[in-house]
Amino acid sequence: MILLQGSGVGAGIAIGTAFVTDTAAVESSFEVIEHDRLTTEVELLDLALKRTAETLRKTRTEVPEDAPHEIAAFLEAHVLMVEDETLREETVNIVYRESVSAETALMIHRDDLIKVFESMEDEYLRSKKDDVSQVISQIHRQLLVLKGEDDKRTEQDLSEYIVVAHELTPADTVSFTNLKMRAFVTDLGSRISHVAILARSLKIPAVVGLHGEVRHIPHGALVAVDSHTGQVIVNPDEQTLEELTRRHQEYDRQHQQLLAIRHLNSITLDEHEITLLANVELPSEIDTALESGASGVGLYRTEYLFMNRAQSPSEEEQYESYRQVVQALDNVTIRTLDLGADKQVDGGRRQGKVATNPALGVRAVRFCLRSPDMFRTQLRAILRAAVYGNVQCMIPMLSNLEELAQVKATVARVANDLRKENIEHNSTVPIGGMIEVPAAAITADQFAQHLDFLSIGTNDLIQYTLAIDRVDDEVNYLYDPLHPSVLTLVKHTIDAGRKFDKPVSLCGEMASDSNYTRLLLGMGLRIFSMDPATLLEVKQVVMSSSVEQVVGYVSEIINCQNSLKRLELLEQLNRIDLTDRSAKAFA
Ligand code: PEP
Ligand code: MG
Image 1: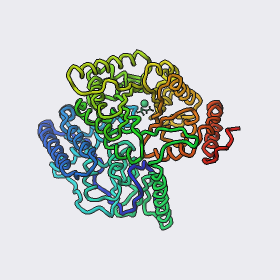
Image 2: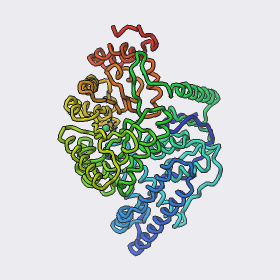
Image 3: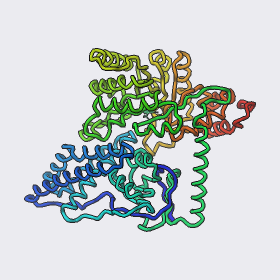
Image 4: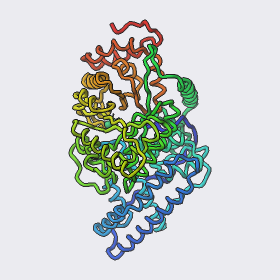
């Protein structure tokens, strides 16, 4: 029996036979070519590009009607990448410059692009390197077909099988889903990569990010995939199989139990109403948000819409996406683009200089104010979609009031343009800001006076306050939501909102972790926005807490000078007998 650990995505536990695919990222040796054959290589490359685009388009037409719409979107995005002139141009340049085969040139170009993506500080954007790799692997395979060195693909029914691959492209995933695969595991991919999103939407158990470990899974072996723990068990013994069945029943039981509170009011034992909202990245997450019983969307990360494509989405496309979410969920906080610095909208393909400290560079609102056309287009789409429900517009990474004044002036101008053009819109959309830079948190009183609402972004607030790159594993151990400086800034922001009667929400990961729910309630937080998958767990804690009981712990925890002791205090707070209103405040 072998136990492998990756990131669990999708839903549930599956046990089946390993189907080891031939979809591994294709590698070729460095192949130098005679000068007079280089033109032939370029002709083959052109043919391979054409065939890859055709194959992807064909797969697109085979996507089942009822499949989540992002599957088609992924395939379209990959077609755009294949047809991107810069991809061809740079590969052709390498063929001539290095005198190498088209395959070798593709590999060199892929590695260069991947380096650019890997240098990005945003986890989501870094995960886009998988798309580059997938697209280039597909072109590569076409080249091998053209040169007669192809491998064979399967047509067999995979309903008994767990697909095992170094990497799956969205196209592969569609094909394997059509062949009814039971689950899949891959070396590449992160929790927010395309395959992970697909697994979630298709509700298939999957484990991604096994970092080369799939080589330990022989074709035909019995494999268990636990999407909750991220474990892949090869040749599980009897006892493990029993344990998996027990776990499966336990997950099911917990899920059913939580579903029972879905329609209940989110209210504490001492009658404080708590708003629980969902964070979403794509319109396709609407169903998950609705299933969780979220009362709206507290953070719509719109930058997702701009990624992995040759051109920015038009006003019309943005409007449609925003409208879809607004019509389904009614209360929606749309965050303007959080892109920038090394995170270019073209996915880094026309990448220029990389900032030394990208997280401190031109990103989010700074980027938007420097890209007025793009910003105005997005604001137009937001104001237009705001006709269909309660929409709020949220500005990321504000660090001073001048930025906010510029944003407001732009919104006013956009509203005026729409009015003159007779285009239906809502010019009274509340403008809120993310409090995620320490400067904004420290001066939250000032921001509260100029914003309609505040939303605390603890992911960045912790990064900037503690000077730790949120994506650098080496300093991960310092990432501490309970650090007194972080808690002080969170509390200060909540207090500022209360003082100026402005709603304050928290939309960083801290809101998704039910370990912090009571502490945040005690600090005065009343609006939580989170990954919908965690919403019911948080709701359960809300419903079994009393603000009155937990409030006494807050200053004790904030003022505690020892990190282990703080954790102990938090555990103690979380252990208070949930139904006992008379439990004493911390002694
Ligand atoms: C945050 O910083 O806490 C946040 C919610 O924004 P993002 O994670 O998208 O930077
Ligand atoms: Mg942020």
